[in-house]
Length: 351
Image 1: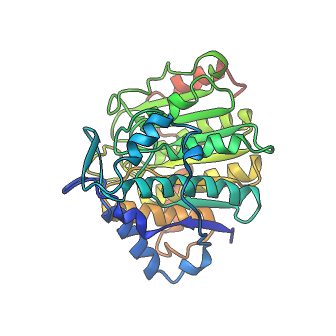
Image 2 (image 1 turned 90 degrees about the horizontal axis):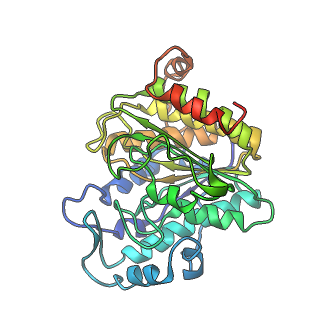
């Protein structure tokens, strides 16, 4: 088994964006309870860590915006965006979530963990440098990438975003940079409206953003082929020192905000591909950060499959059939826009 760190804390359950809000504490409660019931839970590392300090948040966010979110602390309800609300402890939870992302980077660089999964909320990939958006307060993955790039052994970071929604905040954070490659698959056109195929970066960052906008209905085989035929060749050409993943489970079958049909086996297979890629390119350094996913059973099962994929075990998902994983190897499924995305990538990369 690999040394896989899980970041969890009950403080994340104290972020309550309002009655009936789909991004509810029940999302993490379902995952945490499943972990607690599993006999395989002790195979993982559970590190302690500190909240991100203001100077860490400021790696990706403006000081006035950080103060604006901090001012919500202790208040029952604050609306920062039509979809994004806070409660008394939301600011604390958001700082702890960003801290988990940063500490995950540190653990891997020190060799104390090979990979990890930050099971945190609020999510992050929609948050812009100066505004909350799409349930997100601070952009956890962008903060982690910027922090990693301050370390002497990290020159290039690959960010993979498989959430149903395009990570506008993450893309904008690195759109003119050649030190972060942003790869996203997402339902399009859909919220937030960004992520069209021609959005490929600007200036020094041209060619370092690759979007694959997809119509609804894509399942395990489609995502498997996207990763095998597009992501992996581009990643090999880019050669990152670290891989970060915005892991959204709203591409899962039955998600109320969804439209895709990925199963737990599909999430497990994608994770195994990324683990192999990280082992080949960057000493296994692979950190997942939880984004969306609103069907509680699907979210729970998908997360457990990802954790087993990270650890190289079946402790959490003993019933996941090997045949389901093997079936992902079929190369013949047609994927809309895949050929166009590959042609675009070939203008910048030897793939």
